[in-house]
Length: 357
Image: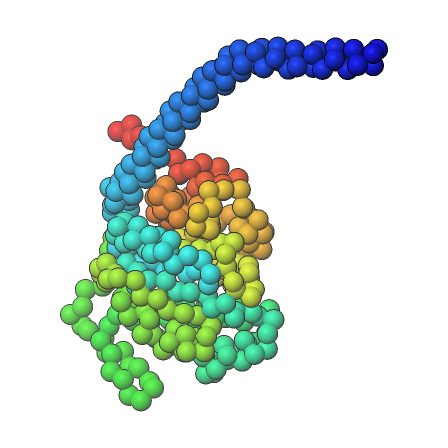
């Protein structure tokens, strides 16, 4: 009897507790559910507002980028008028980014046929590479080794384009009429010719539209030392000024010898007094501008302050900085520009205002 009563009381207590729990749970569940639903609606509303704000900011950024691109011609117009620009880039750098740089240079009034690419097989430590260079030159004035082959290439290229006057042992540089007899060129003086004045510089630079047709460049291309890319139509071939040199590097480069190709070009261009700039392009879609290791190590190899650099050269501001920096380099002013940890400023400082004195 005691056992039956115990079980009966326990059973009643269990169902009573269950009933009380159901009643209380129903009451609390409604409040909790309503509270959670209200919070969820607030979160969704805030999320929608945030997404709308992000879309607005993206639209603003897109508009600013379009404005920056459209403003480039007005910012660079005439800054490099009458000059020619040799644009060299390492294999692997994005070609579309280089096309934008070419466009900016042309908008500034400089003439260039396109891009001279360093082939990915460029390797001064390779005997096979040196043999291809020797084959391109046909006959070299000195024995080529890994120590001198790169400077020999760039010296030959710059000489062929007219940036370096050939020595008297090679040929005679003149603007007078000539008569060719075999391999000998005889200068025919013109008694009625007016001697050039110092006010009108006489350029020795070849018409850029003919660059890729020059024998040495064609041989270097045929032997996979360099690659020649024509981009669109170049600007005027009427070159009255000196040659500018732009060399573009990037972390995406697949050249065997990552730095020596461009560092040797930089040294050679600076040696002969050309306005020289080295630009660094970021990989497409990479918003980071902290990747300065490629440029920094290259500058250590060149060890010269007589050239300018531009990081993030692919950006609108980088392209404007490139043109202005080249203009200043021709005046003997150099600096570190662009967007990156090596850059001292985004753009070169504007010239001091003329006080009228």
